[in-house]
Amino acid sequence: MLLNLPLDRARTRIAFLLVTFCVSGWLAATALQSVLPAILAESDNVARVREALMFECQNDRIQNQLGNLYFWTELDAGKAVPLLRRATEINPWQPRYWLDLGRACESAGDPPCADRAFATAAGRAPFVPRFQLALAEHYLLAARQRESLSALRRYFALAPESPESVFQPFLRAFGPEPIWNALPQSSDSTLQLQLITLLAQNDRSEEAKRYWTRLSSSGVRIPVQAAVPYLNALSANSDFSQIAVVWYDLQEMGSVARPDAQNLVFNSKFSSPPSNMGLDWRYQPQKYISLDFTNLGPEGDGHSLRVDVGSTNSDLDLIEEIVPVLPETTYLLSASVQSQNITSDSGPRLRVQDLGCASCLEVQTEGSVGTSPWHQVSAAFRTGPDTKFIRLSLWRPRSRSYPFEISGQFWISDVTLRASSNQ
Image 1 (tube, rainbow, N blue to C red):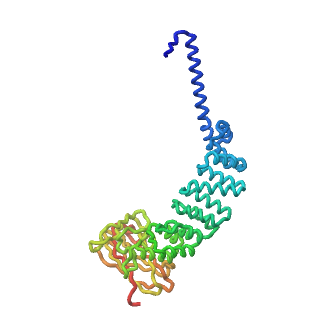
Image 2 (cartoon, rainbow, N blue to C red):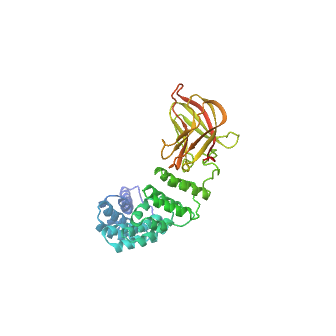
């Protein structure tokens, strides 16, 4: 049935407007009452969140927010714990609530509460690394090694992205062996290598070597890129003996190419771009210098290194390689080189130095000047009684005569170092 209201009358119109206003006000108040607690609950102000709780005392999010504000802002675990506990009672399936409660109970000196809260958080989120780590750290603070390592093992099994910072507190508390045993045993050795690198970086190189030996002899194939951080740590420590050990181990695994059995120089024909690590060639970008590793070798096959030199008169260490050698042994160094328009009388050449005592051994090949076709350069030297490594570099010394500045192009390939048969 339709009602026909006489809206043309003033009294009816006023009544209609009043009813409309009241209904609109009631709807707005209802909406505000439902939205206001949510707005207040997002605040970092204790008073506002407390006001939100007055509107919705059964809201788990507000209970948790107010408890966290008391704990983190006012440092009052006594006020925080009841609120955080209430949040878990309202919504026991939210792992974050249990984690927050655990931290507050731990601070308040309530071990049973903290134990249950951290364990429940980890149980509610068994595949989330941070909850497993929080449980491991809780047991670490409680000096409960077995439980801590058990939780840590579950954390590592979830393949966390950046565990390096995690290792430190557990290493201080337990030492490396329990941590090593907690790491997952699989074909992915990333975590093991991160622990080894951390040990090397923290003056625990002997322990790092021991675990490298254990890992490399386990049958796991280690990709060369995975070993880079450890090799870099060894370089920073000038531990060339261990660099050689790691490099030879990588060769045994097939992760690094084997050189010619009669040639001690790795990547002697620049068949691949230098990796700047281990026993491969190393170089740093330099002003006025351009290096190109894609040129053909002297026989039209293989590769060579091309060096384009701008106008400069500087000592230039263009590229270098660390080579293990035997003491008191005679070696023959040779290479194929060519040049084009080298303007200085002091051209590029190979140089050998004793890595441990540069003044004890320094030998150079003839420098390349002007324009010359592919030809051999060579030098012989004998290592000292304490020589274990040499630094082999492509070097251009500063010129002492006019024209001082150098420019032009230089190529080198087939860099060879062999022990002489005539000792």
